[in-house]
Image 1 (cartoon, rainbow, N blue to C red):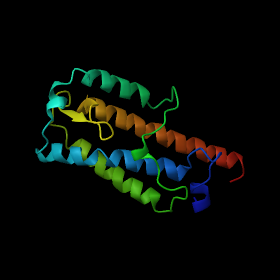
Image 2 (cartoon, helix red, strand yellow):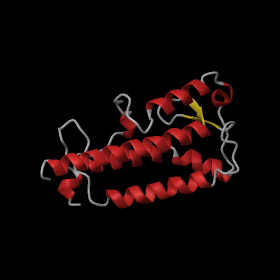
Image 3 (spheres, rainbow, N blue to C red):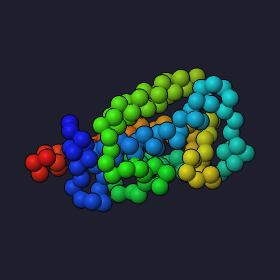
Image 4 (cartoon, rainbow, N blue to C red):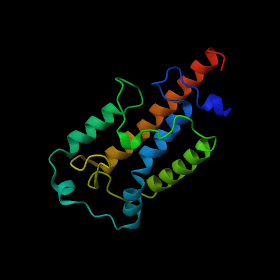
Length: 161
């Protein structure tokens, strides 16, 4: 894939393949510090995370909203937006490295109580969800944007790119 194919967009407001990967890096990277702390045994839930009556509701909501199949288009938080319109060719390598780290942290959670470990959203401090829900929606989110990148590639090919 060339750099121009990586950055091709069907419309100026749509994301390119490269931007889909950059978004995934940005989103997953924001969860890596807490996953690292959980794996190291140094993670401590905040008071709100321990006692929020909204944890289950937020978990269900995020799993539904960020499912693999797009039910409705959502606007990503600014923190997760791709930073550039022209993404460099190393984006795939950076994505793979980030994904490897993410999957390594997930695999090390095998002895963690996924339902009783509650984390706080890296975007909004009053939003909490279980580690089980977090991993579920992050993996679905991953699939969602890989599918988006595939659709962009198919559109580009049908437009002679």
